[in-house]
Image 1: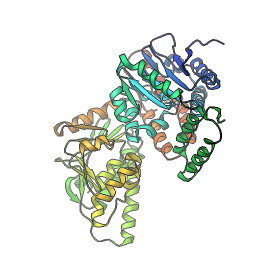
Image 2: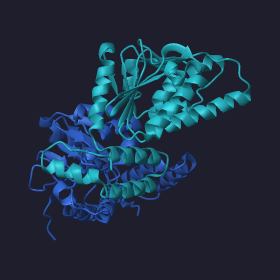
Image 3: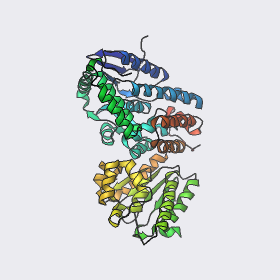
Image 4: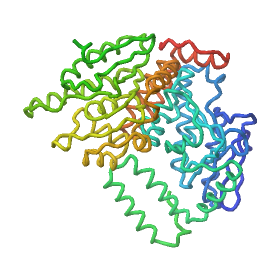
Length: 247
Length: 254
């Protein structure tokens, strides 16, 4: 089935997932979220993909939240199901054994910010703008942002972002630890591609273990985390790197 | 009685709590005054946000410890913790505008706020260790959660103060201003915050706090349900209608 809201391309072991909603803003509508889930499944199952690069390049936005016009008449139950759908996408991205780079090419707001937080690494163009304007709309985010942003940038920075609804530029985002690197717009695509290709060339099983171990470190006590690491170390000597997979 | 220690100034939706600055009062008396103010404010629906500020270039210094029995010390710590939980749980955004030496109870108060802004004269630390004491109003716990273990230990072990620039770098404070502009800048920031939906600010704040100390999966369930609840509010209908009609929203917090 073809995609309406995004494009997929695989080159040099990198799976490029480009959001393209057909307007200035890549809105996370129900259709877009379902397509993203399908696209991540497709790329995860492709043995020729060692790294996934998610972006809205070369458009003006990375992603924004839901369409306000669509969301306005939601009942609480509609909202409940919508949040559940979005959260299931982010769980899928975190469980996906392939590393996911978020290339924040431009406007990254609301649900789009939460989408970025579900990526393993975030690189921003110096044109990127970040905001979480839920309180301006009379809501909070339902896409894990209230939980992941404080864990990523600290409670007080996260509260400032949610309370003010202000826009932050790429430099602010770097300073608060929301993105890992900022690159000038004219070199942006070359640099993220280079990083993605470098990661994609690594043994997939080691990447998958690294991702899973780091993710589990957050919510696991140190003893159990170290035990899992010990198991991963043993497995990495079981056979040739290329032959290893984790389920 | 409480007027002597800290004065509450109401200005429309904004309340300003002026702490005693450099006047070194006893912690017990100050905490009692604070408790009355916080209880009062939590019930005052028309107040949407609170600014804690000092006076004469100091935020909130307190008298050094008199001799206490272990029982008295434990009672004071328990009482102070309750007061700071009341501040944290008041359901409104609270900013701390800091200058001068921000230590002891002053820093513990600031740590219980939504976030801190400061001027360039501000210095931060917990020098109690020099006398064999530690912060006891939640400071060891809130500081560690905010700046991480290594820096929290550095501050607690050494008793040394860090300067404003350093505090910004390590994300202890969110914004720095010139001393003459601190209070005005903090107020205008708080006014902007208070133009947002009070209901969304309250629910969002509670979900951030409640979710921070539990596992991510359970925390996200909490958030999903709070998100759904927003769609039963006037503020959601008004917020989205005003956005689509390109006008300023009239939030009521209901």
